[in-house]
Image 1 (tube, rainbow over the protein chains, first blue to last red):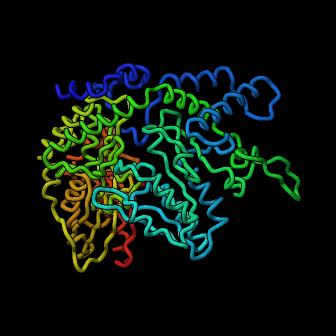
Image 2 (image 1 turned 90 degrees about the vertical axis):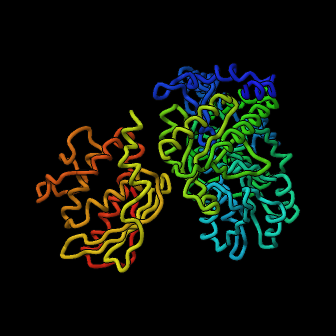
Image 3 (image 1 turned 90 degrees about the horizontal axis):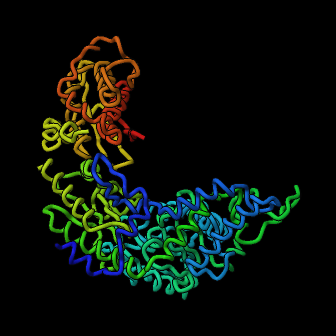
Length: 416
Length: 168
């Protein structure tokens, strides 16, 4: 009955109708219905995305750009059409600001190796926070080694909150780049990115936001955020793997040197001089993941077709319910208790190692992630080797959270 | 698959009360094992006496499978020569990964045919449920890889600069 009460909080959101659009949710695992609670690692694909990729592979595949034949023109129109939709999705000023990359990780590496490497000098500082994913730590470490710049890490508090004042206190005349997550993958913390970006901007600091965990859960408007760069992945927003987007402010992208050389990123090649292509192609060397890009375009359509306010309310209700249900389990500690949180719960259970818990839950068809979530500094901060993480998407239900809780109780019994 | 087969009483007992747990000073050799997938870490220290493993202790943190496996291993290899211990590794490796017949060809280390090849697995057989859970094999084998590394160091007569052993 607790489910019913909560379901009434979100009367407009028909979760069963959403679930029917995701074929994989109908399957079972070890004879139990699948409860897919690993959405922060990768979300599932709706029929719309699967269909768009399938249609492309069956009817339109050819290499894009410069082809005079029909298939190449169709493929180009589909791929570039996806870029246009992505530009609208994040409210970029123009399609020139939307660069196809392999994913968030590649997007951040591109900024580190093109923008940062060409501008950082010894003694400059790159500011990040303690809760970053390894993908928003290591590229900066690499470029700091290459340039002699210093990596500065803003601390978090015991709730996993990044405090505005703590970060801005570290923004100095030496700070050249500020990079942080929009939403923490390990803790769920939503960072005060708009204020942080504004503070950085007022000090002339270039900003990058890692949006991997944000785009599927909240509207993202890069102009409103004011950031210089925003990177995200397709497969965490119901699209295919192997593709993602780097948004960059046109003015900066224009000034940046190309990162990788090859086809597509050039206008003319002579052995004595190569003329680079304009944006966005300047940063898109080689044949891209065409089907992935088209699938991502379909994922944007899928998200835009949702009642986003209702979807967000549903996810918030799932988070509230999960937080209450799990908190009631003896020995369970939730790691990451920021008041501003996306719909995921990281936790430990006394006497049960997360890895064992993951195996036991899998037997019940409940998929969660266990481990360090590519955020080892976060684990070190909370002095845990690993956590279990249940991360929710629009298609998850309260019943699935009940199954998660029952599985945790089962694990506690085994290890009691 | 059956969870009771994975989490047998012996495993649960050795997880709850790991044997030979703690530090060892001075050690003739030590090695550190690390499982990057789940963050399991263990440090293994051993003393050799008359060419045999005299004392062996481990510490660290890991899941039940990794803790119990390390605990069972320390009990099993105490008093064994390096060759005998590595042979046992072969048999455990086969137990964890092969469909039938532990110790058959294809084992991790050359050593079949050495004295002790028919050594009983004893309590180590409790790990046989792991092979139904491929994602967990590394949990059980981490301590053995770490042991092989420590024994190598002991044979080389150096205890310095313990290497980090990974199951990756």
